[in-house]
Image 1 (cartoon, rainbow, N blue to C red):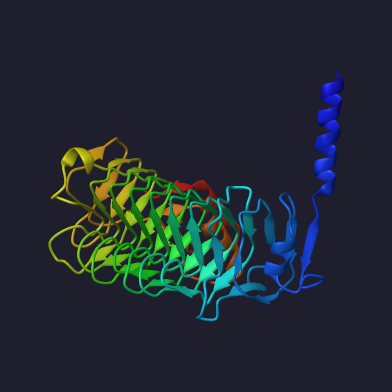
Image 2: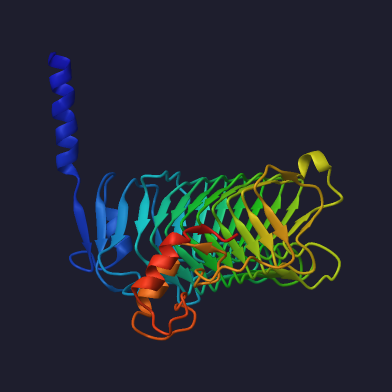
Length: 370
């Protein structure tokens, strides 16, 4: 009993010592607050523009008090935004920032080396990997959690993964928008010996400029994709949507639509590398829609686990206001945003005014377009 009481007292004392460190007062920079922080502390950052930081392996929360648009970590084209290279794990939390202007040979915005931080609610845009991989995020031997982030407009000039690059890393990527990123391979995401879990993400308008995998390029990797929208990505050679070589992704409840390659033979939607052993490059696809891709939908061996729609033209779905082959919250928000107008996209019942009947129509049609 005494031992239990001592442990309870020690735990209570531990909680009591956790502190909030505020930026820019009394700590003038985020790095100064990190330097002063102890495990369990919170660094609260007021709106403003700040220089890049190193999290120093500390189990702390670094959180913006304003919106991402108000609270900016800016590399100013000369440095990376955030470096995690001291064994950080998931209780190192970075939340609510815009991370932009980052420039480094790899990992323009965020570099994770043998570290697994949690990155939440951030906008990561306008960053560049000047020589290698990971225009926005570079992960090596790391298992970060990336959730509710917008990763857009990033560039890996001569390498892989305009948005995210993972090597020997099993990242968890949830509820993110990954769009308009550019790389040689894997415009959106590139994974090498990495089994990513990608859930409820929109991966759109990314480009593999001279090679393959407009949205996702995977080599010796078995990523799991659940409920994702892979739309309007492009590649110079193969896999406008996904290119897999010696890889067997599992794709469940996804839409892979309107992706394209400049190669007029193969792999508009998904391309499975023919030079690899089919037993190790054999995607499993279930409950998904693959449509409207050019020049074809799926090239190479794949396993059909059922309930798929694979066709040249995409299903007609009037309630799909945002055109992502899925009726969901984004469509509800689009209807609410156009309320009272005659917006032809949001007027799903065609009565020339956006209102309650359009909203009810969207709610009734909830789910994958068929």
